[in-house]
Image (tube, rainbow over all chains, first blue to last red; front, side):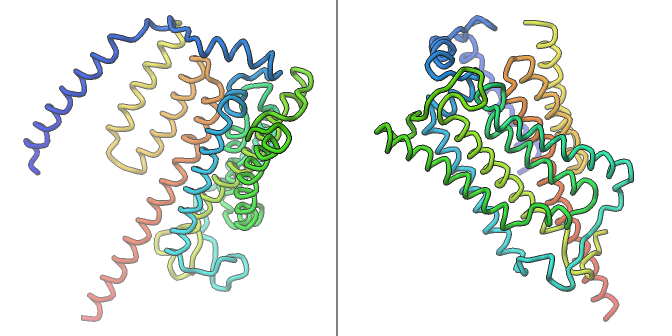
Length: 256
Length: 92
């Protein structure tokens, strides 16, 4: 396709998109003027009925807990797909540490300062991630947010230029276990609702005092389950991608 | 709309354009990371701290790491092809 034809297509499509957008946007309420009914109702009911102070988490784990179950398994299935595909491509021994002839391709650029900062950051990142997971129903954050922050901890070891050390801290089997156990645990908590309250994913545990660490019934459990799954899933994806490039037979290191 | 919100919106608009207009993939990844921080600021000033927390990790490390790994793999394969082509030349 020539440049002129492409430009012509873009102009036609762009004009169409602009028209649709203008029509769509003219009907919208003014900025900051939309106080929807659903938002007001959740803001009023969740803190009083469920003793949760973070309404976003309460929405995710209570009002639309079943949707969260679906999202949970979307992540699980996509990460499994990535792992399956990349392992097939790699066609190597899975246990890298003990395979002879495999060595680490180090970053040439990891300076002492970068290593030090990464080392200092690891405990801080992990502590913050754990805080987010455990305070899901109290402060902004929750299972997903805490999970991705937790996954960023081991990645700091990689930034210090030590990929195989990272793999020793977070081996593939452990990540797979965390990913699948977290996904299963969320479904199991929901099953508890079915057994004890008659409705799947119904909040069946005692609600406790608003603002306490163990409050809002099953939300802390859900948060921990999601945190476990998300941290495992993210680290597993990164590991699969990095395995492709960071390690390999010594002769193949032409790209260094 | 507060001043902070306007600043965040302008930063996101400029950042998005910068990501698209950066031609080289390696640089584009870095610009994308910075754009992610602008987006995080946007979510923060629009009172969505939950989204901001996810955003900062996903575009700060998550996405760049995968793109960088893919770019490195492509470069390794190109080098291998070139090395093989060089061997063939020498054999002739």
